[in-house]
Length: 173
Image (cartoon, rainbow, N blue to C red; front, side, top):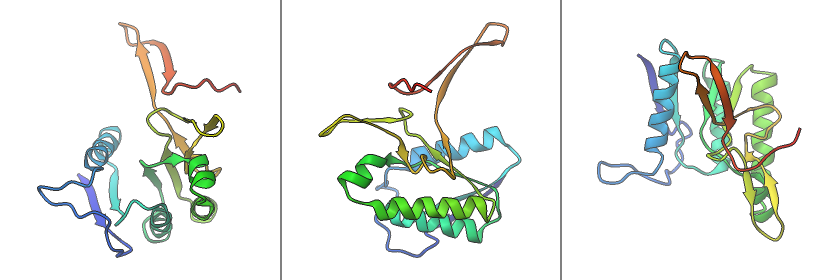
């Protein structure tokens, strides 16, 4: 098993301290992601980097740290937020710009592939002052790969039967 854990590489003040009686909330998803990666690529070397906080500014800084510190390869991220809400509603356009810049540097200069979760539904349909069809930030970055879920059905003989993307919206191409 080629597995390494790096906790809080930027040495920020953590927003949550885990203990046997207090969990921070991402343990099950992180465990599932790591176990799934090992099942898909049993011989792969996996480095789990746990940021000190779940703030988008630190997540972008950790992405930059990963791209410039660790060996090149593929980086999988299991976080996201409706881009419209982050930028328009919360006014956080700086973190959007920084994350997209980091993805650009990582992809074009350092050869790092950043893969981001598109969320449990594949997209966001945000209700607010107007109806907004939205992508999950930062999976919408032009220098990243958006990874979403699909359901795949096989016949009794193992042949392809059908496939359906997760989500509730139909995207017309």
